[in-house]
Length: 190
Image (cartoon, rainbow, N blue to C red):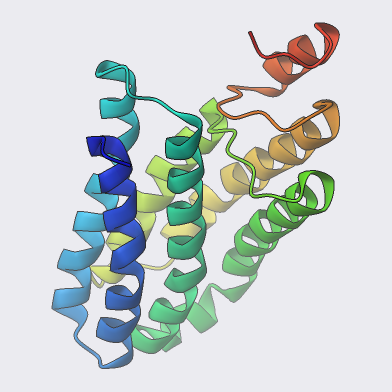
């Protein structure tokens, strides 16, 4: 774990209880700053891993676990800091969160581990959701979730399809097309 991208993912994991505590205690501004740090480390870890040629299976797993734990924490943080807006947008939020959880559960059931596909769709959705969550926690409108949740749903449907297409677990699968190519080659992602 001595490489910088892995340390950034570990930092993001360590920020999850800090985010929860700040939200629970009503420290909205400190929460927002901490969330910005979490977003920046999420953006930086993958870019650095690729640019510095430090991408590893462990790094992909750490990044996925940091994403998973952060995504699980955010609905609670939202409820504690802005319950009225969360209530107004509950259908959209439930659709996005529900699809994410289904994709995660399918991956666990099929491969007994958290998937680490890092698809193009997931990267796009992560940027859009990150922006929407930032706007939300900066006291912006909740309707921004209505624009990004359809993308989240489609991304997670693709991840479910990838899980069923792959003959064995694989990290960093850019799309369903790539998963089907791996399947054609007999399960190797080389």
